Length: 259
Image (cartoon, rainbow, N blue to C red; front, side, top):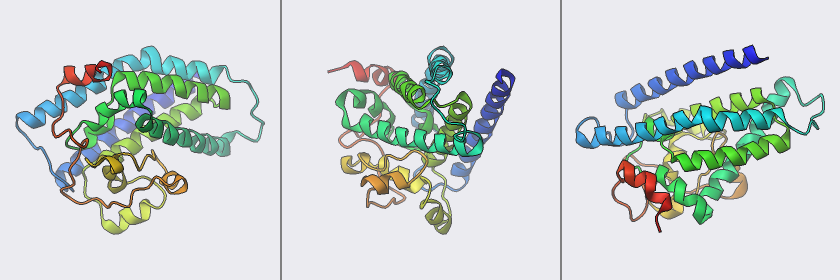
């Protein structure tokens, strides 16, 4: 089992890496919105996003992975035999995606959590790199809460690993600035979160920022009444209402701890 998990982790890393490069290239080839192609502003933004990602990449094997592994290994053992195999995996993915919806919503509605999550929204431009731009405090808090959910629902480690891969693939796709065929995106959006849906979530208007919370499946927002009626347009302003500029890396790291 351990060898299978290690193999899957390696495959997951390779797939996510290729997926990242794919959308990074597509958004340069056929962008939907503004592109910071070069210059000091573009390099500074990429450096901030890469630095935040790097910090979390260092913390992941120290905190995130151990918490998930522990939670998946010490469940109460209540799962019946039929909640296994492919059907069990599908059920686990749906349950975890529902949890992410409510966790994401809580990050917007609870002031303490918003202190950390707003770092993700300070980005005044949006592309694939925005998908990995999170404050380390949010990552740690998320892993702790998710660990309790994994433990309570007795979710196996393999399901957790698959879900983490789905989350990353979905995030890279949703934050991409690539222009998709309108008909294709319309069909996909009935089931999954597409860039047009998620870009509205990053619209620099608070009522839109506080909407479209779904991670993978788009039906949660329709079900719980949080789907924004706003439609994305090419020059939609990105960021937070009243915050016309992004912050420096030290500013982003210290933002949650300021009054």
